[in-house]
Length: 230
Image 1 (spheres, rainbow, N blue to C red):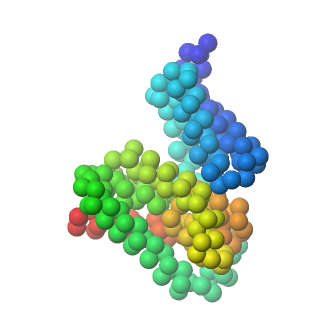
Image 2: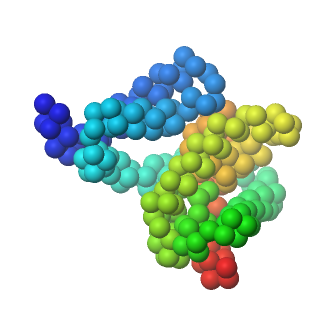
């Protein structure tokens, strides 16, 4: 019976959707940030594959179809930005400065830690696009000689951690402005952070959507230069 499911090209696809659905239900019951639906889904899938001894390749064959939705899903985030275009026009100078600072801080942190830990150059360049959405990060990583699997893992981990700790960070540093909250989530935690931002409010979601696009463009331009210098 197990072979019937695992040989289906839709096995990984529906397993992913089912795990995420359970993650949303668990999040509604347990309101703590650690119960992020994506994080819960990842844990559930790993446990399921380990218990049933199903090879990852069988799961990945169907789950890969979900990656085709990354680009259109990212484009759809432009809708909340369009609705809040007046706010963007009002704060465009601090927005651009903040996003540039965020991109620079990300690059500097990756280079500093990888140099301190004496990590391989290929791992370093694979981590440079960790704070942008997966659809863009994979292309950047391949262009500068990185490893796509490492980049994807770093992007997912960065997004989940950012979404989980965001409320705590905002409280510690007294960040109450919705524009600042949205930009911080989008620039540091990309699409996963934007999901969290949309839960907080439409302004946060719009600014986070803007941060995804702008941070992606900045990273595409800066990452090859940084990779060539280190």
